[in-house]
Image (tube, rainbow over all chains, first blue to last red; front, side, top):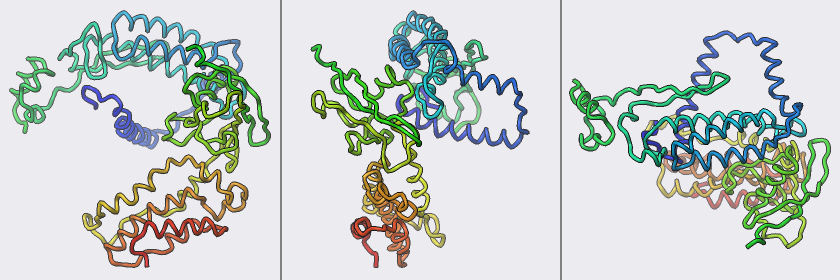
Length: 213
Length: 229
């Protein structure tokens, strides 16, 4: 959606476009499907997970862990990235994930920021690791992603997205092909402008297509 | 420069809708920090469940409204160096609204009042493209959209701060700013359509039980409307 990325402006268009899609999708799904049965075991599991920061024997301060997470991603998954640092980040994030099982929250459930942070850490760690893994795999520099060890843009990487998913235990990253540039759009540009972005094979195959503008 | 860090004394109100009390803490403060930074350090090191509402840390979102030494303030915009050396800084929740916990209050009163104010709707008899605003009219209403809804003005308005019973019939000063915005658009429409404005839009918005806010409202109205008859 953002092309080569417009840092800072992404969040607004993201929330408008994907917020609408997510809302419309959730509403359509809810209308088309019966209410799911929730088992007692699921409920008990969710309740246990929510209670864990209060009842566990852990002694990790959620704020301190959050701060370490910020420092790690700032130092190793920042604006200028390198392969070795990204690998180091993945190791550190795994350590933080282990420690996050031992976060301790004090007080009650009512508007308790330490409790909320204890729960949020899971998602923060998940997103951080997804970013680090995808950044390690993408061996080029493009838009908001700059690799010191791969300083130029590589047209082959324009053809794919990296999709991260979580199966409850670990994150996997798969490469997903993007649709090629439509002929009608291709025709709007001077071919020399597009040579920077497209492979020679793409240039030949799209310009040879029928139809277009 | 090792003297950039120092210990400061805070007195923070902690409690809920039923009960609460002030608690004294000492915490480190760094050069250039604001009250919200120091509250966050208290949270991270001494009171992990201290409730405080915040978001932008830049005076734009209006979330961290509280009373600092009894004055209505945004915690993110109140610098620690504005206090005397060794002074204890007292931090309490907004008194005009019910406490949820610690420094967090329930400000939903404001959202209910906002919903009672009619939104501008273009008249049905005008077709698309017939309703036009002059740039000068667009600009006139912009001033009134600068409000960040921190509700500190609501907190200091004695009509609702000190008289809970007034909240039913009085919306508070924040809505003196909200109304002219609607009125600007409304009066523009009245000029274009050559018909009298709905006076009720002005008078029904915030019927004040005291004279002062009412006169403030009429000042706004006269400032912001050109052709009210």
